[in-house]
Length: 511
Image 1 (cartoon, one colour):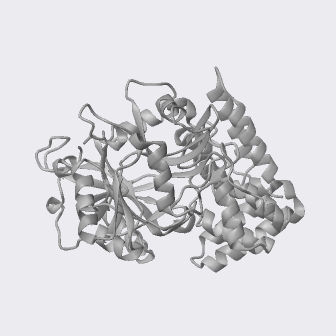
Image 2 (cartoon, one colour):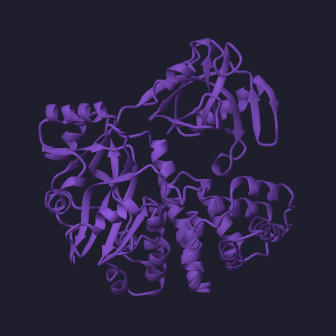
Image 3 (tube, one colour):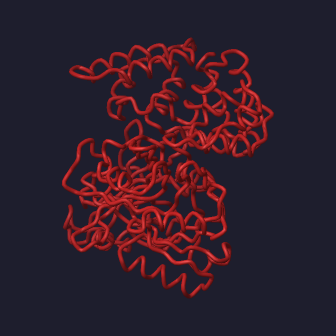
């Protein structure tokens, strides 16, 4: 199949807000792939969600930008899905001395054969940034539509295999019994269960009824599988990072069990036992070699014990099993139906330096890969007034609009730059409606100070209210911090630039 057919479908999905239209476009594509090249079904699905089977292939944004800027695009499409898949194979297998130059040559040769929109698509896949709206939930619906299989069966197979592409292949090429046969396998990661959000623990409890109210740790999600003496540790995105976390492996090897699957978090602690900043945990979490900082695992669920699947058991049963198996590594929490007790636990979690709490219905099964009302996270949201320093031209559905905002905090004393200036603390395009995108695109050029091919730099006079979950240390910006999960709330026409919040105020959020 021509790669251009995937690209065209991705663009069609990007251009519509209708979930039904997205599903139909993707289903039509999957039917064509299954008819023309059945072996490429899983490959195509992986590309559409920017999760190719090869994983990350050692190519970063800077290298890609340099190659693309120096590479003219082809006039007409000629590349196939197989061509792109083979490129990813070659990039993934390139290592050792001179590998960077070799990857550049491979990329340059491929991009010279690609049209402009194929180049954009390929770069999105390589960077894991496909903003097409073809999220895995939409694609799962499309797999069901294309194959005629029940959506519940497709979703369960995808969550238990952790591989939507392989699930699509089975659904389209196999029987319904083949799909039903996809089960929980120790050593093969499953999609993690996700949580909805609420403003308060008491509010969350009204949805769940009696619940386990548990600390929400500011760590990194882990899923640990043990089969005999073999222990494997996976990330939230199902990447295998066993070699990076020997201390987690040692803890699970010491448990009185033969086979087990555990869900939890890992984080670093300071000398007093309090959690270190998230940035430090992620730095240690991503290290290829052991460092002095030690990661401690905390578990909040168990999915399998010695031949017995627990996915469909109520949380009360799973928590009891976990407490017996790993009493020293269970995330703190209490079972309650009392809103006042839930609020007390939330305050205790915050006082100990954690993010908040997760309220979990005590009778709920483990719905892997789903975000429902059985688990509800509660964590404080901070809002700050910041100044827009620049806006980047959008891509995908936002193409042609000024989108990604550069955000600055006020620095009245000039501690991090010129007195009365603004210190960049992050970027975001989250929360921008079509109306806001349209307004930005019309208004910001009137404030233009300069521009390059990708960004319009502005006079720093526009104040915007931004919601964040906190800040983290970052060497990228002069103030030494970066916003966490920033999203636009509204523009503040009633405020002047010197009314914006200061870099010093933001830095107080650092623990």
